[in-house]
Structure formats: structure tokens, C-alpha cells
Length: 364
Length: 146
Ligand code: SF4
Ligand code: SF4
Ligand code: SF4
Ligand code: FES
Image 1 (spheres, rainbow over the protein chains, first blue to last red):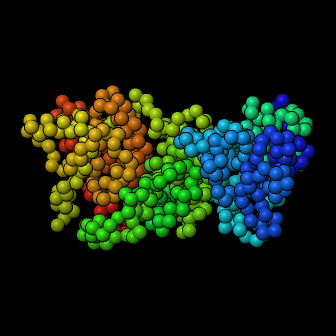
Image 2 (tube, rainbow over the protein chains, first blue to last red):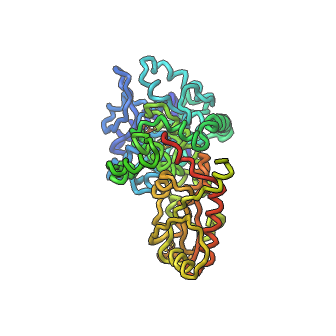
Image 3 (cartoon, rainbow over the protein chains, first blue to last red):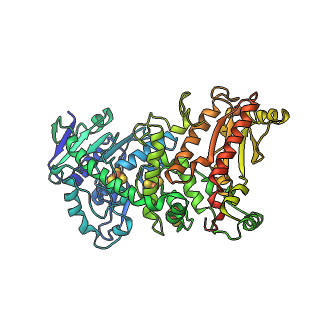
């Protein structure tokens, strides 16, 4: 048995699954996105009582924080915890586990084939709830949904890489009427196996997901090319990042930027008058606040190979810099150096923490 | 002054991060054997090539260095065992980021020069200096908007 089919929509099925996990005592709490029915506000709920699941909105196209980042402070979990998270959030968490900022122990990860999320400015619109039914239909038929985040439309890794439980939503025409719950690991079979439903040996049909992946790939090339004319060379870099106000919001929300004290917020980047005087005498004019572009280059060198393209950084940027697209693009280059895929496997070592004796002989 | 003349006038400013245990000693050796070495290099002695982190290199670049040389012990010979292997990976990442943004990765160079290779030291420095001379000044220097 590798899947359980429920006779209800995918979101309802996930809620039923979570209720089962809590009521049977298989887990002590669940972490899942919620929507306040009165205000329409989203949050991520840490829920121990079944009743708390009534407002759960497990697959709404919203990401207000990266759950992978939040999980860090909830793990290592003493008692079992079930978490509903998007594929990129799961990959981000795996990257954090590699950095010893989280643990998968006692965590049941539940993820789904993801149709992408909308930018937060769309999510806070009053009419956002109306968007959802149509969104689910588009996603189920394997379409890229207009208006979702740039990096979501360009995301090829929308099938969870190593979730314990996978629900198929994107590119699964049946998911509107039915919910298929795939149990991928022993932990899943142990905790979820008793859930009542129709059991089957179904697997997610790769032919269908590959079709959506191909569409996303085309979209990605388009996105990367659209950055190229401006994102290239010193002029391009200044054009793209020159608007940066130095708030560091993009780094703060990034699930990969794990440093407890970011170098850029440390004393090393806290300049005094003599420094500015020296700089000024060399250049004649200075751009303040300082180091705004440096910050991005620094972040790119520190973490781009682990970037999961979640898009949060673009979303929070107050001046509309396509931070996520730039990081995803550069990140693909840096990851390719080491044949690395962020979040693919928790056993895969961070590329800067290992080496091979025979490599990069062209470099030195 | 014509452009040609300007080119001829350009003396690059290159910062060299040299490992104490090998390349720094090679620089000493080259000096004491009176080899001809381009005067463009400002040497910073570090205890291992792995001491040179990304932000240090980026700072050097953004402060306007026309070229940056990182030089350490040959692979397998690092005084601390494997520092240079890690340095090489980090260097590969920085190069790739600069390449990805079209930021002249040629302005960075990594070389392995052991303590006994005075001649090689002179060759590396001279060749890199020529390369940077041909590239011209770091464009960041003229950008008060950077
Ligand atoms: S980046 Fe991919 S996995 Fe993450 S929310 Fe967007 S589509 Fe889903
Ligand atoms: S850099 Fe941006 S897109 Fe990449 S993981 Fe961090 S927040 Fe997500
Ligand atoms: S969020 Fe935008 S403005 Fe703030 S530091 Fe990042 S790029 Fe700059
Ligand atoms: S000691 Fe020379 S490179 Fe490590």
C-alpha cells in the first residue's frame, strides 16, 4: 500500500489527515497555514487541539513566512510534530538541518505538488478568497497560474523531494474531487497507515508532473532572460540593486540565511567618520547607506547554492527588486559547480564544507 | 592625453593575499634573489589561503583593487592539511557569482606557489599584472553610485 484515497477535496483531505493524527495521538501538534475566516488574515498555526484545525488552509496559495525557517525553533521536537509545508519550504528546512539549525527527528513532513503562491500584496486584497477556487482548478489541470510569484511560475521543483507524505494537487485532475495521500516513508506508513480510506498502490504519474515541469522550465528561461540585459555587468548590477534601501528584509526572511549574527549587521560593517573621510577623499562622492550592493554579493557568495527559489525575498522588498529571481539564477550557476541541488538529500553535504582533492584544477 | 597613452600610464593596484607558509616565503625568496617582480602587488600575509573569506575579497574588490591574487600552498601541501581545498571551493563560488553577474571574474586569481618557487612567484605576479593592465582599471573606482 502506498497511497490512501479520500473522497473529498485535497485541502479537506489534508485536514482530515491532520485530525486523524491529533485524535489518534500519533502526533502531539501540527504546524499548518490557517486563514482567519473573519478577517481573511493568514498565519501559520501550531495546533494541538483538533478544533483548532477548523480554520486550517493547508494548500491556499500563500506563503507569509518560510515554514522551513519557523521549524528551526520547534525542533528537535521532543514529541511528534506533523508539518504541512510547500516543497521549497521543505527543501529549505533540509538545508537548515545541514547547517545544524533544525532536526528532522520526530517530524512528519507533509507536502504537496505545488501550484505556487501569490505575492503578499495580492494576498492582502479583500477579494483574495475569490481567487482560490479558480486557482485550484488551474493547478489541477497542470497550468501555470498567472499572477503567482515570478519564481513560482519558474519553479521546476514543485514535486516534494523527500516528504514523508505527499498529496497531489498540481497536475492532478482528480484532486478537486478526491484527495490522494501518498505515503513515502516508513514513518508515514507507521503514523498515517491507519487512516481510513481507499488504499491503493497508486504512484504519482510522472508523465503529468513532467508536463508541468516542462512548462515551468520554459517560464524560467523567460524569467532569466528578462533579467539578463539589466542584470549583467557593473551597470546592470547597479541598475538592478541600485534601488536597494539596505533594510536587509530580504535576508531576514530568507530561510537559508541562517547566521545568528549576519556579518553585514555586525561591527565589521559599522563604519565611523574616519572611514567615510577616507572613502570620500578617494571618490569625491559616496552612496549612503553604504554596502547595499555589497550585501547582495555577499549573500550570493554565502548561500546562493542553497537558494530554493521560494520568492519571499522579492515579496518583502519595499522597492520591488527581483531579489529571488536574481538569487535563483545565480544560485543555479553556483550549485551546478558542485552538481548540488538544495534540499535534495539531507545526507548530501554543503558544497563548501567538503572538497575533492582532484577538482577545479583549472582554477589554481 | 590620448587613450593609448592613458593605457600605458595605467599601473594596476593588485592586492595579494599570500599564505605565510609558502607563497609569502616564495615572495621573500624571489626578492632576495633579485628577480624582476612587477611592483603592482600589495602583499597581505595570511596564515592560510583558507583565511581569505568572501567578504574580505569583496571588500578588496569594492574598495577598488584592480586585481586580487590569492596564493597558497599546492594542493596536498597546506600547512593545516586541507585549508587550500576549502579555499578553492569558496573561490570557485565567488568566481561563479561574479561570472553570473558579468562582473569581470578575471580580476581574481588563485595560484599555488610553494616556498621554494621564487621563480614561479615572479612569473605568476608578472603575468597577472600584465593581464590586469590589459583589462584596465576596476570600473568601480569611477562609480560614486556604487
Ligand atoms: S517556489 Fe515552487 S514549491 Fe515554492 S511555493 Fe513556489 S511553486 Fe511552490
Ligand atoms: S534567496 Fe530568496 S528565493 Fe532564495 S531561499 Fe532565500 S528568500 Fe527564498
Ligand atoms: S529587501 Fe529590498 S531594499 Fe531591503 S535589503 Fe533586500 S533588496 Fe534591499
Ligand atoms: S597553509 Fe598555505 S594554504 Fe593552507
